[in-house]
Image 1 (spheres, rainbow, N blue to C red):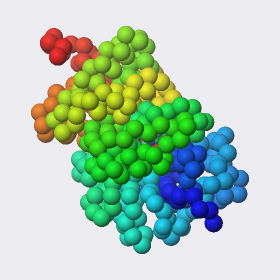
Image 2 (image 1 turned 180 degrees about the horizontal axis):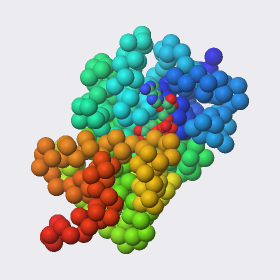
Image 3 (image 1 turned 90 degrees about the vertical axis):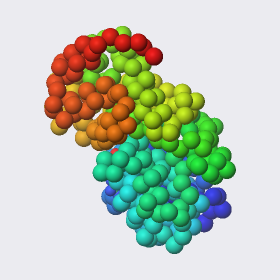
Length: 330
Ligand SMILES: NC(=O)C1=CN([C@@H]2O[C@H](COP(=O)(O)OP(=O)(O)OC[C@H]3O[C@@H](n4cnc5c(N)ncnc54)[C@H](O)[C@@H]3O)[C@@H](O)[C@H]2O)C=CC1
Ligand SMILES: O=C(CO)COP(=O)(O)O
């Protein structure tokens, strides 16, 4: 067996597989766990993951497995499954691993049932495990091809954030560390909702100027929401807030943007996802509910939620947003 540090990755979807790859490039041995045994078999036999990240040859230092016991003795575990599964996944790890280990939460979303952020969900399920979150502008396809990327890793224990950032950074994957977990989580979760709105504007043919306006006003909503929930403006202006808004709201490479774009072109809600994970669809209503609880004005999030609930058509949504009373910008 190798003497390289061992990192666990739970979830061998697009992002888990990409993160496993950069972790090996950073000098680690990676145990890549997924419950999908056919994906494990393909990765072990052919060194590929055609279902989630086609065209990529996996590093020989990635050990694919569906056996949770293989995660005993890793130094940290990156949890890379959808936001709404984090509770079940952390519970499964807490019940099956021999001892607690730092968990790096990589999902971007808010739990619908509870209105909890990912680290709150994880803390509830495994109070002993030290926690960090990883977020920022980063498409799996770019990262796995070694294109330059920069993200933020935050933990309330800043020394842990710094240690993990050092251990997981590579020549092409640059990790900044932070202790502002709350802001980093809010940026990652909210931008998915706004990316759906920006995609819809483009799909409907409303133009680049409309998209820029929508992005700027969406960012104002994100800042208001974050300030009510304890976020800090400096962090929100960084990679995990502004950075990820710019990326995800700009291109159909984003699944959330692509979903909105298809809606804009007339696809039904069912057709629009194209079978891909679209986190913003799950986060929209809980984001709006949490905003209402604190009296935060979030017209764009509210309107896109109404579209997702079939309470408004897209054209009605545009009318609602354009015909609100005029007001001071700031
Ligand atoms: N794909 C990307 O470029 C990026 C994705 N993310 C975030 O990472 C998270 C995961 O996204 P992707 O990897 O792209 O999704 P994906 O759809 O490609 O893969 C999801 C993975 O989660 C596993 N999974 C689903 N439900 C599960 C459950 N109940 N228990 C255990 N495993 C389960 C699937 O087997 C699969 O391995 C999302 O929150 C996403 O927003 C963040 C940054 C970039
Ligand atoms: O979070 C991402 C980029 O930072 C990926 O965005 P999508 O989930 O919309 O593809």
